[in-house]
Length: 354
Image (cartoon, rainbow, N blue to C red):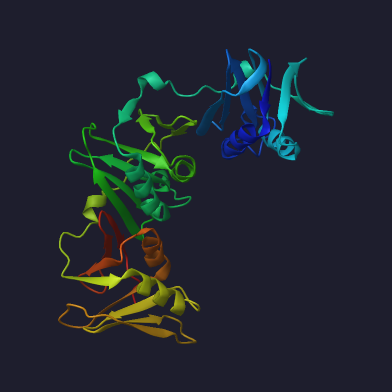
């Protein structure tokens, strides 16, 4: 195998492969990037078995078909230090030789035939959705996905395909985030996508692409990348039971003013108390040793004062992904979960008990 290509696009692709490499065990083949020339197409892959990324580069010269593997971290370190000119690659005696002008490197390879395979695209089901709506929905719920929970299904996001809508759901047991989009004609199903995969999808995909899945894998692809992740095998909690059927009081609040007020008083402690009056909202820090308080002037449609205490991080996570000028706060009683809502995005939060 040999080929020549320009540094710019090649470096971009190799850099995008790094999150999918095995970094702890450098003796594993998954610490390597897979490179293959088929006809006039350069194919590049990276996987740690749980997730993987594939890309291709068409702008190659002086090529011969073949395949190779090379340590992904070392390859990127070399490419970054080379000039923005063409780089030559060639396999000689089970080593990958990299040359540019009078500079050369020789890196060892593993047997490319033993590199892990990617999912068979022909057996996957396509999800017919607007990718922009999907990306916005998973951005909304990402902060609500748990980390290292013994219940593995909580370490991922649920994609719940119903008859008339698709719900994107996450919970860390203290809050529940749910974002909804319209279901056009997709088959009813539920899949759980790991948090790391949810984060990587947001980094890689911005334009039109396809989403496919089966019982084991989720695949997202566009003209530049094909990404796959293993799904979490488990039963997601019945989140519908957590959603309040009725909210006794709903108030609309200016988003930017609320963000500024929270950030102002959480200089000391994250937990805050929020009191709603007919003409204002009072925010107080819950710090035994010191005091912080601020007030938002807001005309509210409530009959009597109401308060709850909350970890401010949960509020800011919601507000950082909402876009409207005003959002809704709905509540029933001080000790019961309350709701934050912005169009099709809702977060249910457990209050702090005072």
